[in-house]
Image (cartoon, rainbow, N blue to C red; front, top):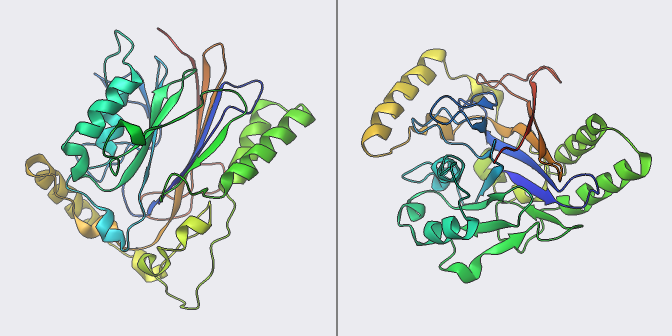
Length: 315
C-alpha cells in the first residue's frame, strides 16, 4: 500500500523524503538507477510488470522529485486501474528539462486529466527540491483539494494509502529520529540508518488465521509503517515460466488497451523496497534505496540490496 514521509525539520537538509514500497513480492521491479535515453536525467527504480515501466518515486538531475502512494481499496484487485499509476509519476519526472516546469501548472492539468481517473486511486507528491511540494489525488475534483508541503522549515508530513488528513503514524517517529541525529552530531550514514529504522517499524496486528491473505489484512495495513510478509509460503510458488509468460502477455495487452495480468496481484505481499532522499540547500542530493526481496520473492540479505547515488542539481 506504501507510505511516504516528508520533512524539512533537519537543519542540514532542506528536504528529506522516505518511502516504503509495499507490493506483491513477485511483481518484477528494477533496481534504482539512471534511466536509459531519452530520460537519462531521471533516477529511480521502475515497475517492470507493465510495459510503461512506471515508478512510484524518483528524482531528476534538475531537481524534480515525486513520490506516489496508492489508495486503500476493499480488495487488492480493486486497486488496479486501466493504466499504471507509475505513468503519473513518469509524466512529471520526464517532463520539460530545458525550462522549469511549474508544479502548479502540472498539478492543475493532472487534476483535469481524464486519464488520471483511469488509474487506481493514488496520492502524488511532486515538485522541485527547495520549493514547496504539491500533494494531489485523483480523488480530487479541483485545485481547492491540493495541499502544499515543505513550505517552511520544521515541517514533517506523512502520506499513506488513505485520506490525507489521517496520520499514518510515522511523523512522530521521523521527527524524533531527526532530533536525535542532530543532538548526537552524527554523520549522514547514521541519519540514513535512523530513517531506515523508522521505515522498519512493524505494528501490524497479527490476525488469527495462519494463512491470512492481503484481502484479509487490507484494512489493517494503515496501522503499520512496515508490512511484514503476508500470505502463505505456497502463494510464492509461481514458476519462472508463469512469470515470464505473464510478462509477455502483459506487454502485448498494455500496448493495445493497458490491461494488466492478474499474476502480479496475488501471492505473498509486503514491504519490498525502502527509499530515502536527502537534499541539502546547496543542491546536493543523496538517493538511497534498500531492496528487501528480489523478483522471486526471496529475501535479500541485509545490505546486499542497498544502492546509493549522489549528485548536484543542475539547472
